[in-house]
Structure formats: structure tokens, C-alpha cells
Image (cartoon, rainbow, N blue to C red):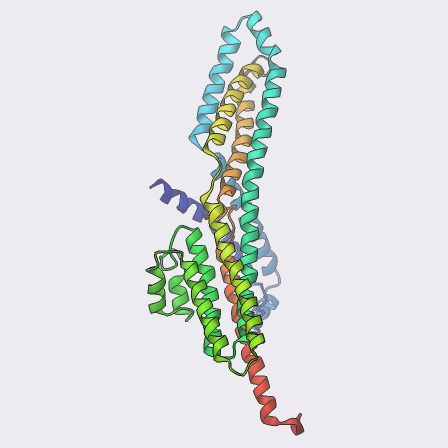
Amino acid sequence: MSNRRASNRRASLKQPYLDCDRRLSIITPNLNGDGASASTSTDSTKSPASASDVDADGCISRWRHTFDYLMYMIVGVDLLIVLALASIITFSVDRLGSEEWLSYITASQPAVGILGAFYSFALVFRTNTCYSRWWEGRVLWGSMIVCTIRIAQQAHLWIKEPALVRRVSCLAVMYAYCCKAQLNGAGVEDDTQEGTKLLQKGVVSQEELDMISRQSGWQSFYCIDEMRATISSGLEADSMQDQWKNNAAQTAMEETMGKLDAGIGGCLRVKSTSLPVAYDIILNTAGCIFFVVGCLAWAPAAKYYNPILVLIVYIIVKMITRVGTYMEDPFGDDESDLPLGKFCEEIHKQITAIDERAKFKLATRTDDIERGPADL
């Protein structure tokens, strides 16, 4: 139940950006050249102030989203516990401490500063380690995007059978969405994934989607195996092409698919291996010691401002720790995670553009052949 509430809360945090994008789409020009752009320009001429109104609404939505996200990271029962404990310690030092004890506590401030420096170093080291995992996931997905689009380009270049080229393109799109589903801990056929949408768009058939869902292994590897089989069939069917060209094509495409193998393998390695549990235990223990000792050392000078001071320091440490925790697994649905859905949509968009360019070139070439040299 708590996981469901957390996912619902994350979805509500993302809604302001969705609303903002929906508003901004009103004034965004349509690059496809359809009638939407004309209607947009007409609307903008009718109401010149609408663009500024939308920008203002977008800024308000972003600020509201930022505030909601900060509240999501900061607010918790632990803040009340820290404030209560700091208040008790400060009251005890102020009311029950003798002058001798107060002098000892005040003299411990340099030692507390050294302890805080060590704790800050450990905290920054953890955050950098988590960021390196996030960055590695980003680099791996960048390579997967390039190689997925490249395999579609290579299929159009080397394979002459249009049906086989179309199948390679569809399998490349399915590979991206299967990787996304696998890293989200689901299957591409699940309701939370895009299998049904791909079925409706004609990227995959119902029979093949059922076959992918029955796979005991990685669904992304099914797509790679099918791409290999399709490419092999396409190169063997082209008897008009020289053997050395077929060998060069197969070598180049096999290299690309090897990078696809390595990409999803690297992403799964990042997702499956987390930080050592002992490191977090030691860091949390050191944090508790630092806040208790720091609260004692700051109490004689800060007086009843001390609980607020301790709470502010705790909030800063909590935000840094939670950002590192979110980046530790970059393939989830948190605010700081990688936008895998956008990556897949861009892959689908680019492969569709490749197919459309190939059809246009084929139509132009056929036109030139029918007209003949005398008509050119």
C-alpha cells in the first residue's frame, strides 16, 4: 500500500510538468506541416496576449512543481523526531548543566567540526558514487539509442527485401521498449508498459507479443535474436550482391547488435548491483553521532535557536542523501531518473523517419526510371 501511495504521489508531482507541456503545445509550431500549424498561427493572431499568459502559467506550474518536489523530499515524521530530540537536549543543557559542564561542552566544538568534516566527506563520496551510476546508465542508453537507429539504417542499406527491412525496423523499436520494461521490472505486455500501443500501431503482431511475453529469458534478447535471423535471411536472399559485400554487411550489423547486447547487459548490471549495505549503515551511524554531539556542542551558544539550527542542517543532509538514493537506480520512475519513455519514443520516431525517407527515395527512383533519360 505504501508503494502504491508513493507511486501516486510521484505521478501527481509530474502532473504540473505535463500540464505545462500541454499548455505550451498550444503555441508550439507543428513541424509536420499539417493544418494544426495554420490554426495555431490564426489563434495567435487573434489573441496576442495568450502566449504571455501561457508562459506565466508555465512558470507558475514549474515553481509549484519544484515546491511540491522539495516537500516530497523533505517532509516526514523524522523532522518532528529530530526537532523534539534537539529541543530536549537544548533544554537539558540550559537548565541542568553546570558551568563546568558547559565549559567542557563548549570546548568540544573544534572536535565536532572535525567530525562534521569527515561526515561531509563521506556524504559527498556517496553522492558522487550514486551520480556515477546515474551517468553510466545515461551513457549506456545513449549508445543503445545510436545503435538501435543504426541497425535500421543498415537494414535499409544492405537488405533489398522490403518486408525483411520492415521487420528489422519493428524489432529495433520493440527492443527499445523491451529494455525499458525490463529495467522497470515488468514485461512489455504489462498494462504499465507500451506493448498494447505498439500492437495498435502495427509494430508487433498479437502472436509475436504473446510469444515475447512467454519468454523465460530477457525479452530484449528475443528481439536481438530475431533481428539476427532476419538479417541473415535478407543477406542470403540477395543473390545479386557480391559475397564480399554480404560479408561486410553482416560484420557491420553484427557489430551493431553486439553493442545492443552490451548496452542492456550494462544497464542490468547497474540496476542489479547497489551500494554496499555496510556503507549506508556506517554513514547513518556516523550521522546520528554527529547530530547528537553537534546539538550538545551548539546548545550553550545557540540557546533555544539550537533546535532550529540542528533541524536546518538535518534537512540539508537529508536532501543530499535522498538525491543520491534516487540516482542509485537511474531506471525507476522518480523525478531524477532517466526518461526511458522519451528515449523509446525518440527511437520510434527516428526509425519511422528512416522508413519514410526510404519510401520517398524508392518512389523518386521509380519515377526517374519511368520517365527515362530524355525526360530528365
